[in-house]
Image (cartoon, rainbow, N blue to C red):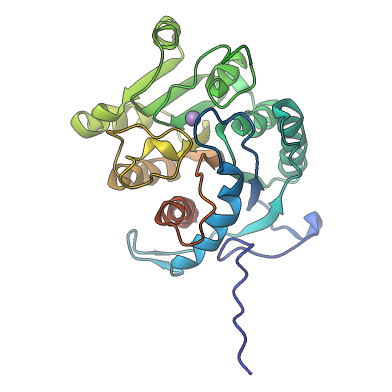
Length: 296
Ligand SMILES: [Mn+2]
């Protein structure tokens, strides 16, 4: 009798262990965060971790785009216990989990879930590293820089403002094409926020490349990818789609540049589909697969 041995609840090519002591040093851990309680438009990113993991079986171990075999060791630890309706408690739980991992030298890859959850790994990593040395690379259609959204400080729309409150070395936003006047005014007044629009990725990519290459090889980088940075024609299943987004080719180029640097944590958030085999989920899975291939 033949059995299909694929495990759709674990990311393809991931290792299996429940014992932190068995982990090889400097490896990566994948954690799902099925949380979407502050979604303001399209909900459903709570299904992201499941549909992305299932879609990860679309790819070969050999990554033909980069002519590279996947050799990065990473473990899929499943999902954290989220507290639905409670942004703060969910972030606190995730922060605790990421703290446990970085204490044994494992770097986090977080699969959302909505964007608010990015605060947790960044806070945990900021405790371990010096936050004033950390650069946050934020790929998104939206600035996510508003102080309070509908009176709430904890929201997918405020996440980068909360990160800015921690006072990192710099936040570099790429792919932006939506933001309030107040957010833009705030960002312009800061000397540690750089904004590159979606148009900039098409008409002035060299400036973006130069900016990223100014980051020294040893400097810690956290990479946060809101998948709505891609044009909705590539990924339509997101919480807040905005037209005129970046292309997958640009995203591949950015990953190639960043993978040569010192990325200490990564997240991919806001994929909102519960449909297995959805092409948006496959595209989301490919970003994680490409990143894991490139850093190996
Ligand atoms: Mn976002």
